[in-house]
Image (cartoon, rainbow, N blue to C red; front, side, top):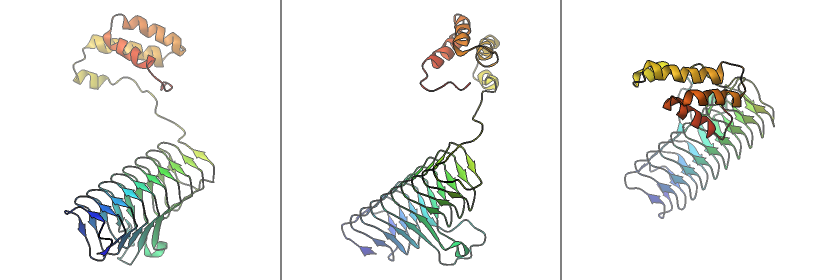
Length: 264
């Protein structure tokens, strides 16, 4: 293993002799770093990470535990050809993130730029090209061959279809599924968000709520969601029901304590 002897390597880490670690690199417990991996100065690799090569990671990145970086592409056409992953500087890559190398017929290289925040459970597939200063919230997923510009935000559980492009400064909303190109500066969101569909009656029965308690909760639900009453009017009706029901009183207290708009 070439590199600076001052690198801080946990004794349980497994590092291939062909890996190259820069000055001040830290490697946590039980991490595995394979051949043809190059890690720049000051980068920190958390415990139980797996980094396979050929992969080049720049300086001052923080890769948290259990991330899997540089794995073979998840593509049936891949036949073991030499392909690579390149990651820039100053990125934060959180737990269980997966970033795959490229494919031979897709350009051969997956690239992630600098100063990105890639949060837990995100996936960057083969041959993707990601710019700088992006935020990928938890569980955001890129299929293969996706191009993402600079300063892009992917909200939680967003998914992007293969070969799509997302322009600079775009915002992809929570749970949105993108199957076409998104020009720069746009905000994209699912057409419909979650909506109430009744009370969790079966779950309440399993937890010992009797018929009278469930009936009171149903009355409160109908007042809030099934009539034409405005919110203040509905809350007044719920308050009357709450006078004889601790469950409905808790329901009303929850509504009153909210700082976000009520899902209604």
